[in-house]
Length: 221
Image 1 (cartoon, rainbow, N blue to C red):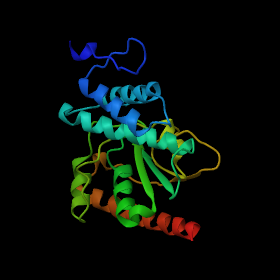
Image 2: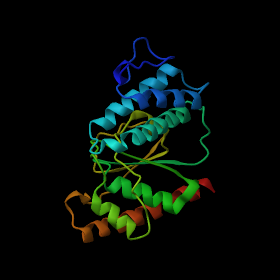
Image 3: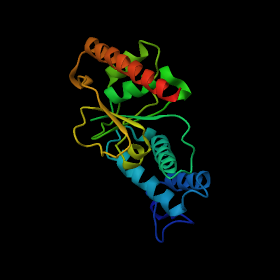
Image 4: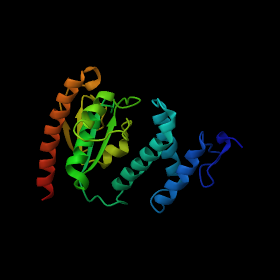
């Protein structure tokens, strides 16, 4: 039996998984979200996440791990929206075009500064295949590791789960929902910048993140 013939035991009739690990991931996530989502919903999210990341994958060796993280996070976001998972801390979503530079720096910086006080996600309207190397270097210079991060497409579930959506040059790609706070940070795109200029953008983002975090802290107090 080939990978293309492997069907989920509890899944949609005739469903075939293009990779064996997708079947295993669907089973794992079905157990994790038992009582919240059906096996069919989990399978759909796994296959959608795989397809979305496959389009831009440059190194297939990392794909399995990325799909697991992306699908799991999307399901967690949906569970939050539906009230199945507690919403104990503010949810901040950073969005730029490629999710390879500005939004990634903002997410890493926010996580470093806020820790568990804020839950952070990032996404891109047209995600790149991997992070901008200069961005990785600029973050490493201040002691932050972005090596596990990767560009992710913008999905409706993570927008719906967010309390604050920060956009950075992604145009009108981000859907607007009532009751959320939307911010737009005007920042240069690191894609065509020198390392020195990327450092400048990093520091500008740090200032914005500090200000946003101060506001969130006041709101929580």
